[in-house]
Image (cartoon, rainbow, N blue to C red):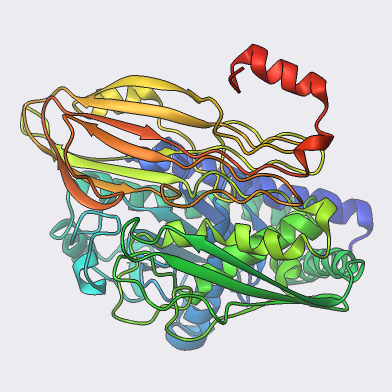
Length: 541
C-alpha cells in the first residue's frame, strides 16, 4: 500500500479530526449499549480517548465525563514509562488498573488501555474508564475510614494477553465484588469499546492510505495548543486569588479551598496552597484528578469550541501541597473524591472573574449528589444501583442558569422507570425547587426536590453524597448566592449528609437540591424576566 507522507492541508485535517472524534464516539456508544450497570448505561459515567504512540490524547468521546478524559492520557503515559514499555505490548492486549493515583482518583473507576497495531507496528492506544458498580469493601461513597476499606485495588495488569483473557484476574474480581455480573459485564463492555475503536481506526487508515497517526496527531495537538495559547494571551497578566468554603462532612469538619491563579503571557498556573488538609471522610482527591477538573474549566473559559486533546492542556499547570485535600496521599480514603473535584470549577471561575469576567459563570448548585442503593430483592437477587441528582446551573454573563443541571460533570439521570424497576423504591416526587436560584442580572438555575419511598420488605444499604447543605453556591460579579440544599427522612431520625446508612421499609427520603449562583447585580435584571419567573413559579410573589 502506498502511504501518504505529506502534511495535511486544513480541509483534510478537519475531516480526519472529525473522523477520529466519530471513532471514539462510536466506541463510547458500544460501551454504553453493552454495559450492565445503570451508572454506565444510563448515567454515561465513562470516557473513551484515542491516543498516539506516546500516549498523547488526540480525540475524546463527546459524551464522556471531563475527569476521565483528562486522566486517561496520564494513565497511558505512566504505563509506558513505568510498567509496560512499547516492546512489552502485543496485539490483543488489554491492561487494567483502578489504582487511584494512576487512574481516575478512586477504586470504582476502572481504566482499560489497549494498544493499536497496524501492519505489525504499534501506532497508538485507545483507553476507556468506566465507573464500576462495585469494587468490594465499604459501599461506594464517603464512609470508608481509609483506602483499604474501599475495596480491591488492581495494579496495572494485563486483563487480556494477546487476545486471550487473563482468567485469574477475572476470577479475583468476581470473588471480591457485589453483584459481580454487573461489574464483570461492564468490564467486558469496556473491552468491546476498545476493540470497536481499533476496528474503526484501522478502516480509516486503509481508506486514507495511512500507516500511522502520530503525524496527524501532531498537527491536531499543535492546532489546539495554538488556539489555547492565543486565548490565554488576550487575558490580562496577573495573580488572582480566591477562597471557597464547602461542607466537608456537613457537620463538624468543613473544608476550604484556596486557589491562586497566575496568568503570564500565554500560560496559566493554578496553585492550591492554603487548601484544607486531608479529610476523615473519603472526599480527598489525588492530583491527577485535581488537574483534570481544574484544567477543564480553564479550557471552557478560554477555548470552549476546540475539541479536547493534549494540546489544549499544555499551557495549563496545576500544583498543590502534597497531602492536602486536593493532592491526597495514602492511606486516606478517596471514594467520594468527585464531590471535591466537582467544586473546583467554582474556585477557578471565582479567580478568573477578576481577569475575564465576561467569560466565566457563577457557581453551580451542586457538586452532583450521588446516591447508591445496595440490597436484596424479595426473591434473593442482589442489586447495586446508582442515581445522580443535580442542583441548578450557575448564571452566565448573558443568560440565566439552566434548572437542574450541573457543571462540570455531565453524568445523566437514571430514568425513574429504570430506578423503580431495578430497586424496591417508589419515586414520590420530582419537581423544581422554587426560589432556589441566586438573584442577579441573570438568575441561577433552580434546584429540585426528589423523594423516594422504600416499598420493599428488606432494609437497603444506602450511601449518600450531598453538598451545599451548609454552604451556598457563590454568585459572581455581584450576583447573589443560591439557596442551600437539604436532606430529610420520614419518619424523622438522624441522617448524615455524607456517609453510609440503612434505608428501612416504609421510610421516605426527601432530597432538596441547591440552586445555582446569580451573575451580576440584580438591579440590572430585565423586569420582564422577573415577571416571567413569577408566572412560571420559579420565584414567589
